[in-house]
Length: 157
Image (tube, rainbow, N blue to C red; front, side, top):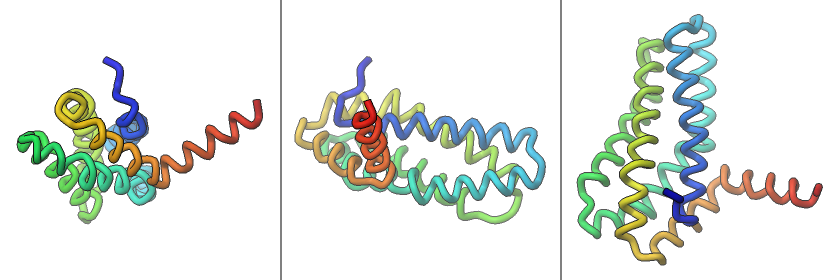
């Protein structure tokens, strides 16, 4: 199924999140202590630049209209996943085990959003609500960087 254009930036973010999740899982399985520490540093940077702003767009623009449409279970799961990911990032201790849990939860969360949350949003939300999501997503640092990259690529051709 083709994703609604207004949700495509969030879906692109999901691709990057899946790559991060897999790296976290692999590092937790076989990485040295130094690699685990480095992976957590990478997650912290990515959280600040990508995941955190992505979560905020969903929490501020996507979830309230879904809640109003009666999609309480989907909204609750999304908020819970976001909070659990934030908590895993903030916790101390058992870096290897926590890293594996973070990667697994991030992977499962992205798949949930792509297979359940976004298709439901496409069905039940008004087009103006989806446009609001797209506008908020386009204003995030990651989306601005993507747009700059596309503009530079286009001007080079």
